[in-house]
Image (tube, rainbow, N blue to C red):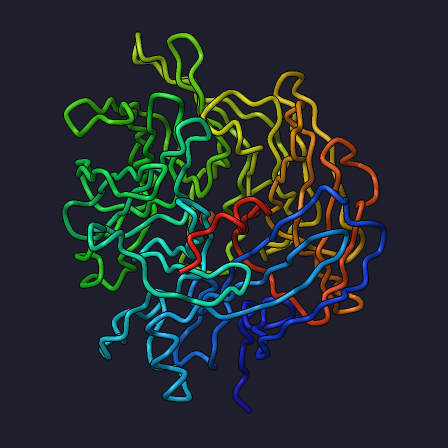
Length: 460
Ligand SMILES: [Fe+2]
Protein backbone atom coordinates (compact mmCIF):
# COMPACT_ATOMS: atom_id res chain seq x y z
CA UNK A 1 0.00 0.00 0.00
CA UNK A 2 1.27 3.43 -0.89
CA UNK A 3 1.66 5.63 2.12
CA UNK A 4 -0.12 8.94 1.67
CA UNK A 5 0.71 11.96 3.74
CA UNK A 6 -2.43 13.99 4.38
CA UNK A 7 -2.18 17.69 3.80
CA UNK A 8 -2.95 19.29 7.19
CA UNK A 9 -4.47 22.28 5.38
CA UNK A 10 -7.19 20.00 3.96
CA UNK A 11 -7.81 18.33 7.29
CA UNK A 12 -9.52 19.07 10.61
CA UNK A 13 -10.73 22.66 10.83
CA UNK A 14 -8.48 23.70 7.95
CA UNK A 15 -10.64 21.50 5.69
CA UNK A 16 -13.15 23.30 3.47
CA UNK A 17 -16.89 23.20 4.03
CA UNK A 18 -19.36 22.67 1.20
CA UNK A 19 -22.56 24.42 2.27
CA UNK A 20 -23.46 28.08 1.91
CA UNK A 21 -26.11 28.80 4.53
CA UNK A 22 -28.02 31.56 6.30
CA UNK A 23 -28.89 30.95 9.94
CA UNK A 24 -30.80 33.32 12.19
CA UNK A 25 -31.87 33.22 15.84
CA UNK A 26 -28.49 31.86 16.82
CA UNK A 27 -27.95 30.72 20.38
CA UNK A 28 -25.86 33.16 22.40
CA UNK A 29 -24.00 32.22 25.57
CA UNK A 30 -23.72 35.44 27.54
CA UNK A 31 -25.08 38.58 25.95
CA UNK A 32 -24.36 40.49 22.77
CA UNK A 33 -23.96 44.15 23.77
CA UNK A 34 -26.90 46.35 22.67
CA UNK A 35 -24.49 48.96 21.30
CA UNK A 36 -22.64 46.38 19.16
CA UNK A 37 -24.46 46.80 15.88
CA UNK A 38 -23.12 45.97 12.44
CA UNK A 39 -21.49 43.03 10.71
CA UNK A 40 -18.31 41.06 11.30
CA UNK A 41 -17.03 39.40 8.12
CA UNK A 42 -14.00 37.16 7.80
CA UNK A 43 -12.28 35.90 4.66
CA UNK A 44 -10.38 32.65 4.23
CA UNK A 45 -9.45 29.85 1.83
CA UNK A 46 -12.05 27.19 1.07
CA UNK A 47 -11.22 25.14 -2.04
CA UNK A 48 -14.42 24.51 -3.95
CA UNK A 49 -13.13 21.19 -5.34
CA UNK A 50 -10.36 18.78 -4.36
CA UNK A 51 -7.10 20.35 -5.63
CA UNK A 52 -5.47 18.86 -8.73
CA UNK A 53 -1.97 19.46 -7.40
CA UNK A 54 -0.11 20.04 -4.15
CA UNK A 55 -2.28 22.32 -2.04
CA UNK A 56 -0.98 25.39 -0.20
CA UNK A 57 -3.14 27.05 2.47
CA UNK A 58 -3.07 30.28 0.42
CA UNK A 59 -4.62 28.54 -2.64
CA UNK A 60 -8.25 28.00 -1.60
CA UNK A 61 -11.17 29.93 -3.09
CA UNK A 62 -12.21 32.84 -0.89
CA UNK A 63 -15.15 32.18 1.39
CA UNK A 64 -16.74 34.89 3.51
CA UNK A 65 -18.23 34.11 6.92
CA UNK A 66 -20.38 36.91 8.28
CA UNK A 67 -22.20 37.61 11.52
CA UNK A 68 -24.80 40.40 11.34
CA UNK A 69 -25.27 41.64 14.88
CA UNK A 70 -28.16 43.86 15.90
CA UNK A 71 -30.34 44.28 19.02
CA UNK A 72 -28.50 41.54 20.87
CA UNK A 73 -29.16 39.00 18.09
CA UNK A 74 -26.95 37.50 15.39
CA UNK A 75 -27.50 36.13 11.89
CA UNK A 76 -24.74 34.04 10.29
CA UNK A 77 -24.16 33.52 6.59
CA UNK A 78 -21.32 32.25 4.46
CA UNK A 79 -20.72 32.71 0.75
CA UNK A 80 -17.94 32.05 -1.69
CA UNK A 81 -16.41 35.05 -3.41
CA UNK A 82 -17.50 34.30 -6.97
CA UNK A 83 -14.29 35.03 -8.84
CA UNK A 84 -13.74 34.15 -12.49
CA UNK A 85 -11.84 31.08 -11.41
CA UNK A 86 -14.58 30.05 -9.00
CA UNK A 87 -17.26 30.37 -11.72
CA UNK A 88 -15.22 28.44 -14.30
CA UNK A 89 -14.54 25.63 -11.86
CA UNK A 90 -18.15 25.66 -10.63
CA UNK A 91 -19.34 25.07 -14.20
CA UNK A 92 -16.64 22.46 -14.83
CA UNK A 93 -17.53 20.63 -11.63
CA UNK A 94 -13.87 20.21 -10.78
CA UNK A 95 -10.67 22.09 -10.06
CA UNK A 96 -8.82 23.31 -13.16
CA UNK A 97 -6.34 25.92 -12.04
CA UNK A 98 -3.24 25.04 -10.09
CA UNK A 99 -1.85 26.52 -6.91
CA UNK A 100 1.20 28.38 -5.64
CA UNK A 101 3.35 25.30 -5.23
CA UNK A 102 3.04 24.15 -8.84
CA UNK A 103 2.20 27.33 -10.75
CA UNK A 104 3.76 26.03 -13.98
CA UNK A 105 0.71 23.78 -14.40
CA UNK A 106 -1.59 26.75 -14.78
CA UNK A 107 -1.86 26.82 -18.56
CA UNK A 108 -5.63 27.04 -18.79
CA UNK A 109 -5.77 30.81 -18.79
CA UNK A 110 -7.69 30.68 -15.55
CA UNK A 111 -7.17 33.70 -13.36
CA UNK A 112 -5.79 32.58 -10.04
CA UNK A 113 -7.34 35.50 -8.20
CA UNK A 114 -8.88 33.66 -5.25
CA UNK A 115 -9.99 36.84 -3.38
CA UNK A 116 -9.40 34.82 -0.21
CA UNK A 117 -7.24 36.96 2.04
CA UNK A 118 -8.85 40.00 3.57
CA UNK A 119 -11.64 42.55 3.40
CA UNK A 120 -11.78 46.31 3.49
CA UNK A 121 -14.66 48.74 3.72
CA UNK A 122 -13.94 51.98 1.89
CA UNK A 123 -15.91 54.50 -0.15
CA UNK A 124 -19.21 52.88 0.87
CA UNK A 125 -18.09 49.53 -0.51
CA UNK A 126 -16.81 46.23 0.79
CA UNK A 127 -13.91 44.72 -1.16
CA UNK A 128 -12.59 41.16 -0.91
CA UNK A 129 -8.81 41.25 -1.38
CA UNK A 130 -6.02 39.05 -2.72
CA UNK A 131 -2.54 40.49 -3.21
CA UNK A 132 -1.96 39.13 -6.72
CA UNK A 133 -4.90 40.81 -8.44
CA UNK A 134 -7.84 43.19 -8.38
CA UNK A 135 -10.34 43.38 -5.49
CA UNK A 136 -13.88 42.01 -5.75
CA UNK A 137 -16.82 44.19 -4.65
CA UNK A 138 -19.11 42.48 -2.16
CA UNK A 139 -22.71 43.35 -1.32
CA UNK A 140 -23.35 43.80 2.40
CA UNK A 141 -25.05 42.27 4.33
CA UNK A 142 -25.83 39.68 1.62
CA UNK A 143 -22.13 38.87 1.03
CA UNK A 144 -22.87 38.42 -2.67
CA UNK A 145 -20.12 39.09 -5.19
CA UNK A 146 -20.92 42.09 -7.38
CA UNK A 147 -17.90 42.08 -9.69
CA UNK A 148 -14.18 42.57 -9.94
CA UNK A 149 -13.44 46.14 -8.85
CA UNK A 150 -10.99 48.20 -10.91
CA UNK A 151 -11.76 51.84 -9.95
CA UNK A 152 -13.31 52.59 -13.36
CA UNK A 153 -10.40 50.90 -15.09
CA UNK A 154 -7.81 53.07 -13.31
CA UNK A 155 -6.33 50.15 -11.36
CA UNK A 156 -3.03 49.29 -13.07
CA UNK A 157 -1.45 47.05 -10.44
CA UNK A 158 -2.32 44.22 -8.12
CA UNK A 159 -3.91 45.26 -4.82
CA UNK A 160 -2.49 44.37 -1.41
CA UNK A 161 -4.67 42.51 1.07
CA UNK A 162 -3.70 45.21 3.59
CA UNK A 163 -4.62 48.68 2.35
CA UNK A 164 -4.50 51.43 4.97
CA UNK A 165 -7.25 53.98 5.58
CA UNK A 166 -6.28 57.26 7.23
CA UNK A 167 -8.93 57.66 9.94
CA UNK A 168 -8.76 61.49 9.73
CA UNK A 169 -8.75 62.13 5.97
CA UNK A 170 -10.51 58.94 4.87
CA UNK A 171 -7.93 58.39 2.10
CA UNK A 172 -6.97 54.79 1.40
CA UNK A 173 -3.37 53.93 0.53
CA UNK A 174 -2.57 50.64 -1.20
CA UNK A 175 0.19 49.04 -3.25
CA UNK A 176 0.59 46.24 -5.74
CA UNK A 177 3.72 44.17 -6.29
CA UNK A 178 4.70 42.21 -9.36
CA UNK A 179 7.31 39.73 -10.66
CA UNK A 180 7.86 42.09 -13.60
CA UNK A 181 8.94 45.76 -13.46
CA UNK A 182 7.62 47.95 -12.05
CA UNK A 183 8.04 45.63 -9.08
CA UNK A 184 6.07 47.98 -6.84
CA UNK A 185 3.32 50.51 -7.49
CA UNK A 186 1.84 52.79 -4.84
CA UNK A 187 -1.67 54.25 -5.07
CA UNK A 188 -3.99 56.57 -3.16
CA UNK A 189 -7.79 56.44 -3.25
CA UNK A 190 -9.81 59.47 -2.08
CA UNK A 191 -12.27 59.16 0.81
CA UNK A 192 -15.06 59.12 -1.80
CA UNK A 193 -13.49 56.12 -3.53
CA UNK A 194 -11.74 57.73 -6.51
CA UNK A 195 -8.32 56.34 -7.43
CA UNK A 196 -6.29 59.55 -7.38
CA UNK A 197 -2.78 58.48 -8.34
CA UNK A 198 -0.41 55.54 -8.85
CA UNK A 199 3.38 55.91 -8.79
CA UNK A 200 6.05 53.26 -9.40
CA UNK A 201 8.60 52.65 -6.62
CA UNK A 202 11.96 51.20 -7.70
CA UNK A 203 13.18 47.99 -6.08
CA UNK A 204 16.40 46.08 -6.91
CA UNK A 205 14.44 42.87 -7.44
CA UNK A 206 10.92 41.48 -7.19
CA UNK A 207 9.92 40.60 -3.64
CA UNK A 208 6.85 39.21 -1.94
CA UNK A 209 5.43 42.19 -0.07
CA UNK A 210 2.39 41.34 2.01
CA UNK A 211 1.80 44.48 4.07
CA UNK A 212 3.00 48.05 4.63
CA UNK A 213 2.22 50.91 7.04
CA UNK A 214 1.25 54.55 7.12
CA UNK A 215 1.72 57.45 9.51
CA UNK A 216 0.04 60.84 9.42
CA UNK A 217 2.49 62.05 6.76
CA UNK A 218 4.40 59.02 5.48
CA UNK A 219 3.99 55.63 3.89
CA UNK A 220 6.42 52.81 4.79
CA UNK A 221 7.29 50.00 2.38
CA UNK A 222 9.11 46.81 3.37
CA UNK A 223 11.59 45.53 0.78
CA UNK A 224 12.46 42.32 2.63
CA UNK A 225 14.73 39.60 1.24
CA UNK A 226 11.97 37.16 0.20
CA UNK A 227 12.68 37.48 -3.50
CA UNK A 228 11.26 36.17 -6.75
CA UNK A 229 14.04 35.17 -9.16
CA UNK A 230 12.79 33.32 -12.25
CA UNK A 231 16.35 32.09 -13.00
CA UNK A 232 16.11 29.85 -9.90
CA UNK A 233 13.61 27.64 -11.72
CA UNK A 234 16.36 26.49 -14.15
CA UNK A 235 18.43 25.44 -11.14
CA UNK A 236 15.52 23.39 -9.79
CA UNK A 237 14.95 25.82 -6.95
CA UNK A 238 11.71 27.56 -6.00
CA UNK A 239 11.26 30.94 -7.68
CA UNK A 240 10.46 32.50 -4.28
CA UNK A 241 13.21 32.19 -1.66
CA UNK A 242 14.43 33.95 1.44
CA UNK A 243 17.95 35.39 1.01
CA UNK A 244 19.52 35.42 4.45
CA UNK A 245 22.57 37.32 3.17
CA UNK A 246 20.57 40.34 2.07
CA UNK A 247 19.43 43.25 4.29
CA UNK A 248 15.90 44.26 4.99
CA UNK A 249 15.10 47.64 3.49
CA UNK A 250 12.40 49.94 4.81
CA UNK A 251 11.41 52.78 2.49
CA UNK A 252 9.77 55.88 3.94
CA UNK A 253 8.02 58.19 1.51
CA UNK A 254 5.84 61.26 2.04
CA UNK A 255 2.22 60.25 1.46
CA UNK A 256 2.06 62.09 -1.86
CA UNK A 257 5.72 61.52 -2.65
CA UNK A 258 7.21 59.40 -5.40
CA UNK A 259 10.32 57.33 -6.03
CA UNK A 260 12.50 60.47 -6.07
CA UNK A 261 11.87 61.24 -2.39
CA UNK A 262 11.75 57.81 -0.80
CA UNK A 263 14.35 57.23 1.96
CA UNK A 264 15.60 53.70 2.47
CA UNK A 265 16.79 52.32 5.82
CA UNK A 266 18.73 49.03 6.07
CA UNK A 267 18.39 46.56 8.92
CA UNK A 268 19.18 42.86 9.47
CA UNK A 269 17.37 40.35 7.22
CA UNK A 270 13.88 39.42 8.37
CA UNK A 271 10.39 38.81 7.08
CA UNK A 272 7.20 40.55 8.15
CA UNK A 273 3.77 39.40 7.09
CA UNK A 274 1.84 41.98 9.11
CA UNK A 275 2.40 45.40 10.57
CA UNK A 276 0.54 46.46 13.70
CA UNK A 277 0.88 50.21 13.20
CA UNK A 278 3.32 53.06 12.56
CA UNK A 279 3.51 56.63 13.79
CA UNK A 280 5.72 59.69 13.95
CA UNK A 281 7.53 60.78 17.10
CA UNK A 282 9.93 63.74 16.90
CA UNK A 283 12.51 62.99 14.21
CA UNK A 284 11.55 59.33 14.17
CA UNK A 285 9.09 57.13 12.35
CA UNK A 286 8.15 54.16 14.54
CA UNK A 287 6.97 50.88 13.05
CA UNK A 288 5.56 47.95 15.07
CA UNK A 289 5.16 44.59 13.32
CA UNK A 290 5.38 40.82 13.71
CA UNK A 291 8.95 39.92 12.69
CA UNK A 292 10.41 36.55 11.75
CA UNK A 293 14.16 36.10 11.33
CA UNK A 294 13.49 34.21 8.10
CA UNK A 295 10.59 32.60 6.28
CA UNK A 296 9.95 29.55 4.17
CA UNK A 297 6.44 30.54 3.21
CA UNK A 298 6.00 28.14 0.33
CA UNK A 299 7.69 25.20 2.02
CA UNK A 300 4.77 24.11 4.14
CA UNK A 301 4.87 22.90 7.73
CA UNK A 302 7.98 24.76 8.75
CA UNK A 303 7.85 25.88 12.34
CA UNK A 304 11.27 27.52 12.22
CA UNK A 305 9.86 30.92 11.36
CA UNK A 306 8.31 32.17 14.56
CA UNK A 307 6.98 35.73 14.59
CA UNK A 308 7.53 38.11 17.51
CA UNK A 309 6.40 41.67 18.05
CA UNK A 310 9.19 44.10 17.13
CA UNK A 311 9.62 47.83 16.91
CA UNK A 312 11.79 49.75 14.47
CA UNK A 313 12.65 53.42 14.98
CA UNK A 314 13.79 55.15 11.78
CA UNK A 315 15.48 58.48 12.44
CA UNK A 316 14.76 60.78 9.51
CA UNK A 317 17.51 63.20 10.63
CA UNK A 318 20.39 60.82 11.26
CA UNK A 319 19.36 57.97 8.95
CA UNK A 320 19.85 55.48 11.80
CA UNK A 321 17.56 52.53 12.59
CA UNK A 322 16.96 51.00 15.99
CA UNK A 323 15.34 47.57 16.02
CA UNK A 324 13.97 46.15 19.27
CA UNK A 325 11.98 43.07 20.30
CA UNK A 326 8.92 44.08 22.31
CA UNK A 327 7.87 40.67 23.57
CA UNK A 328 9.18 37.09 23.43
CA UNK A 329 5.73 35.53 22.96
CA UNK A 330 5.05 34.12 19.46
CA UNK A 331 2.25 36.24 18.00
CA UNK A 332 0.69 37.12 14.65
CA UNK A 333 -2.44 38.77 13.21
CA UNK A 334 -1.84 42.20 14.81
CA UNK A 335 -4.71 44.71 15.01
CA UNK A 336 -5.37 48.03 16.70
CA UNK A 337 -8.25 50.44 17.18
CA UNK A 338 -8.16 51.62 13.58
CA UNK A 339 -9.60 55.01 14.50
CA UNK A 340 -5.96 55.70 15.47
CA UNK A 341 -4.21 54.09 12.50
CA UNK A 342 -0.99 55.95 11.71
CA UNK A 343 -0.96 57.63 15.13
CA UNK A 344 0.64 56.38 18.33
CA UNK A 345 -1.61 53.90 20.09
CA UNK A 346 -1.32 52.75 23.65
CA UNK A 347 -2.62 49.27 22.85
CA UNK A 348 -2.09 46.56 20.27
CA UNK A 349 -3.94 43.26 19.93
CA UNK A 350 -2.34 40.09 18.55
CA UNK A 351 -3.17 36.42 18.22
CA UNK A 352 -1.20 34.17 20.59
CA UNK A 353 0.28 31.27 18.63
CA UNK A 354 -0.02 27.76 20.00
CA UNK A 355 3.08 25.55 20.18
CA UNK A 356 2.24 23.72 16.95
CA UNK A 357 3.62 23.26 13.46
CA UNK A 358 0.27 24.64 12.25
CA UNK A 359 -0.79 28.28 12.54
CA UNK A 360 -3.15 27.78 15.49
CA UNK A 361 -4.06 30.66 17.79
CA UNK A 362 -4.82 29.71 21.38
CA UNK A 363 -5.67 33.17 22.65
CA UNK A 364 -5.50 36.94 22.29
CA UNK A 365 -2.84 39.23 23.68
CA UNK A 366 -3.42 42.89 24.54
CA UNK A 367 -0.16 44.83 24.66
CA UNK A 368 0.07 48.05 26.62
CA UNK A 369 2.96 49.86 24.93
CA UNK A 370 3.01 52.56 27.63
CA UNK A 371 3.94 50.04 30.33
CA UNK A 372 5.32 47.13 28.33
CA UNK A 373 2.77 44.84 30.01
CA UNK A 374 0.44 42.45 28.30
CA UNK A 375 -2.73 40.58 29.17
CA UNK A 376 -3.87 37.27 27.70
CA UNK A 377 -7.32 36.01 26.82
CA UNK A 378 -7.14 32.23 26.61
CA UNK A 379 -9.71 30.57 24.31
CA UNK A 380 -9.62 27.45 26.50
CA UNK A 381 -8.30 23.91 26.15
CA UNK A 382 -8.39 22.63 22.57
CA UNK A 383 -10.00 25.84 21.32
CA UNK A 384 -8.35 27.92 18.63
CA UNK A 385 -9.29 31.25 17.10
CA UNK A 386 -7.85 33.60 14.55
CA UNK A 387 -7.32 37.26 13.98
CA UNK A 388 -9.41 39.36 16.37
CA UNK A 389 -10.87 42.54 14.96
CA UNK A 390 -11.16 45.48 17.35
CA UNK A 391 -14.62 47.09 17.22
CA UNK A 392 -14.75 50.46 19.00
CA UNK A 393 -17.82 51.11 21.13
CA UNK A 394 -19.89 53.91 19.56
CA UNK A 395 -18.89 57.28 21.09
CA UNK A 396 -16.07 55.68 23.08
CA UNK A 397 -13.56 58.00 24.74
CA UNK A 398 -10.91 55.48 25.75
CA UNK A 399 -8.84 53.78 23.05
CA UNK A 400 -9.59 50.27 24.34
CA UNK A 401 -13.30 50.82 24.92
CA UNK A 402 -14.69 48.22 22.54
CA UNK A 403 -14.68 44.54 21.69
CA UNK A 404 -12.43 41.98 20.08
CA UNK A 405 -14.26 39.62 17.73
CA UNK A 406 -13.06 36.36 16.20
CA UNK A 407 -14.30 32.90 15.27
CA UNK A 408 -13.17 30.15 17.64
CA UNK A 409 -13.24 26.42 16.87
CA UNK A 410 -13.47 23.76 19.55
CA UNK A 411 -11.40 20.76 18.46
CA UNK A 412 -13.24 18.61 21.03
CA UNK A 413 -16.87 19.35 20.21
CA UNK A 414 -15.95 20.16 16.57
CA UNK A 415 -18.11 23.29 16.67
CA UNK A 416 -17.47 26.94 15.86
CA UNK A 417 -18.45 30.07 17.73
CA UNK A 418 -18.20 33.79 17.24
CA UNK A 419 -16.50 35.09 20.36
CA UNK A 420 -16.89 38.67 21.58
CA UNK A 421 -14.41 39.78 24.24
CA UNK A 422 -14.56 43.11 26.10
CA UNK A 423 -11.16 44.66 25.28
CA UNK A 424 -11.10 46.42 28.68
CA UNK A 425 -11.72 43.11 30.47
CA UNK A 426 -9.49 40.96 28.35
CA UNK A 427 -8.86 38.21 30.88
CA UNK A 428 -12.58 37.78 31.62
CA UNK A 429 -14.88 35.27 29.96
CA UNK A 430 -16.19 36.50 26.59
CA UNK A 431 -19.24 38.77 26.92
CA UNK A 432 -20.88 36.67 24.21
CA UNK A 433 -20.31 33.36 22.45
CA UNK A 434 -22.54 32.99 19.41
CA UNK A 435 -22.93 29.32 18.45
CA UNK A 436 -22.54 28.88 14.68
CA UNK A 437 -24.55 25.99 13.21
CA UNK A 438 -21.70 24.86 10.95
CA UNK A 439 -17.95 24.62 11.14
CA UNK A 440 -16.08 27.84 10.27
CA UNK A 441 -12.67 26.78 8.92
CA UNK A 442 -9.56 28.58 10.15
CA UNK A 443 -8.94 31.54 7.88
CA UNK A 444 -7.24 34.84 7.36
CA UNK A 445 -8.46 38.40 7.90
CA UNK A 446 -11.75 39.98 8.89
CA UNK A 447 -13.31 43.38 9.20
CA UNK A 448 -16.16 45.07 11.01
CA UNK A 449 -18.75 47.11 9.16
CA UNK A 450 -20.80 49.39 11.42
CA UNK A 451 -24.57 49.82 11.20
CA UNK A 452 -24.00 53.36 9.93
CA UNK A 453 -21.67 52.12 7.17
CA UNK A 454 -24.16 49.43 6.09
CA UNK A 455 -26.92 52.05 5.88
CA UNK A 456 -24.72 54.38 3.84
CA UNK A 457 -23.33 51.71 1.54
CA UNK A 458 -23.41 52.48 -2.16
CA UNK A 459 -25.55 49.33 -2.52
CA UNK A 460 -24.79 48.45 -6.11
FE1 LIG B 1 -2.38 39.16 5.71
